[in-house]
Length: 317
Ligand SMILES: NC(=O)c1ccc[n+]([C@@H]2O[C@H](COP(=O)([O-])OP(=O)(O)OC[C@H]3O[C@@H](n4cnc5c(N)ncnc54)[C@H](O)[C@@H]3O)[C@@H](O)[C@H]2O)c1
Ligand SMILES: O=P(O)(O)OC[C@H](O)CO
Image 1 (cartoon, helix red, strand yellow):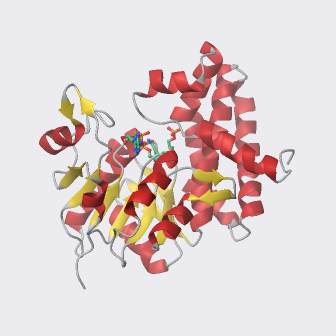
Image 2 (cartoon, helix red, strand yellow):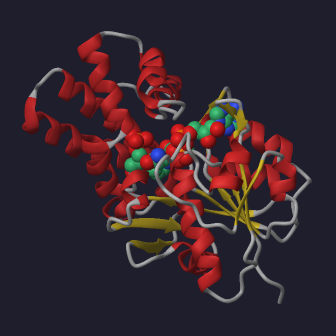
């Protein structure tokens, strides 16, 4: 069997952290090609291309300043060049860009490739709700696992301990992704529940927005705990209403309760929602002012989830 060749589709805050872990792990474990390509949505920073900055300094100065990246990572501005020879595709882009990226990759990747989605979001169109793994799988005709967890990227960049959850359809692929991604400070649990894991990642962003609003209104810790508890129950009810196979135990993995807590205390969604209350500026403006190019996922997801519920007459649930 040939070597597995990994490509990352995405290079933001989380994308850069996970790229660094992968860049190191492919050198530690047999069976992987040592070069890892990372697709970068090209932009100019102080007159220089971000890809050139990353390849020359081994630092993503825009999305993960202050951390050195593994030198075997190659930043590539051309999506097809990054992906065409990969047997393992790691999707880690904001959810609103997934469809566009898949359209470009359709028919242009290896037929035996497999993918994992680290994206926290869902796709909603006039036909209803579509998990991101399903969008990738249907467009590219490959098997797709999911990863989600209590994973604030900057903490993992510092190698502070955290856990995560991989959802798989095919056990060997779950084990491959555990192998590729686990480190002593980043523990990977695997569970046969791709949709459950990824829906947790999408829905917790809405709870985190609510938690930030609670903080902005200064309603205190009891109110926030109530939002977390009721929010987790609503996440479970939503996921299992739309996908009967989603498992109860998924909500007790890192992707469930742990990520709701971490996001409700430390995430970007929480921070921007608090500022929404205290400044009364629109979310879009605060996203630009506070996140330096990083993207908020929870506001769009709240709107998307609400539209699905409304269409089904389930808003009051
Ligand atoms: N940052 C975290 O702590 C964290 C942790 C876990 C999961 N996630 C999830 O990972 C996903 C990616 O988040 P991130 O933190 O890596 O990104 P980010 O929010 O830091 O950065 C935004 C990224 O989007 C890219 N981008 C901008 N316009 C684009 C376009 N038109 N097409 C394609 N890409 C474009 C930018 O180049 C940048 O790489 C999100 O779903 C997020 O919820 C983030
Ligand atoms: O910063 P947020 O709110 O996008 O959350 C980041 C991660 O998803 C936390 O697990």
